[in-house]
Image 1 (cartoon, rainbow, N blue to C red):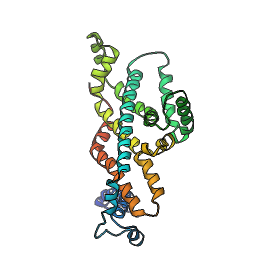
Image 2: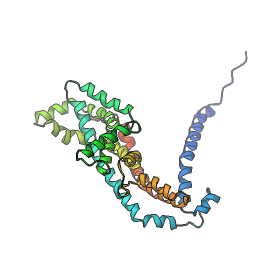
Image 3: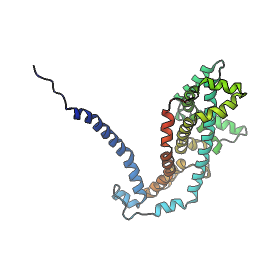
Length: 289
């Protein structure tokens, strides 16, 4: 009887690892090659980008970057993006944590229905709902609440569309806190808000940091909401400014590349420092009592 062929043991162990490294290598190339081309392009002239798009810029041309960082409009967009980032993150995290606490720790009629409403909100991305949202903002503006062409309108819309996902994440962490801790706090005279603010928030700090990081990245890179809400160029955020800048200097690819590369630096730096917090916060799974 013929024996069946089997691979050597070392090859059986090595093949899965080889394919893992192969997939990771391909993914790395797909992600980083466009970034490298963008950075190289920002240090070239437009002519060099057309003739030698994949070569290292030798010598580097710093004129494009200097013209961007010395532009007053660029720093105005940076300031607007920071205002929207801070406002959206603060509002979204506070409301998400508060709603998650109520849905996880308090008992009231219709709690599951309210939670299901927030879950259903995940099915309606902002791309689908932006038109009715704009009509609501325009109506409120006509009533004397200035939300159109106002950074406050951008903050409110961005924070609202972050609530569903944040509540879905944070509710599990709030639920994992032992009920004995809650009973002890109430015996010591804590109100519901005192227990939420003084005890629960410090316990779920890793999850809050992870969710805040995701909100900040989404807010910084958001183009659609500022595009719909803002009309004045003095209120443009960086993503909106990038689109308009590309339209204005579409033929000067080197200058556009420099603008895009510089605009992405804060996001890259932030994610570099927050990556560990995001992973640990989302994979913790439970809070130790």
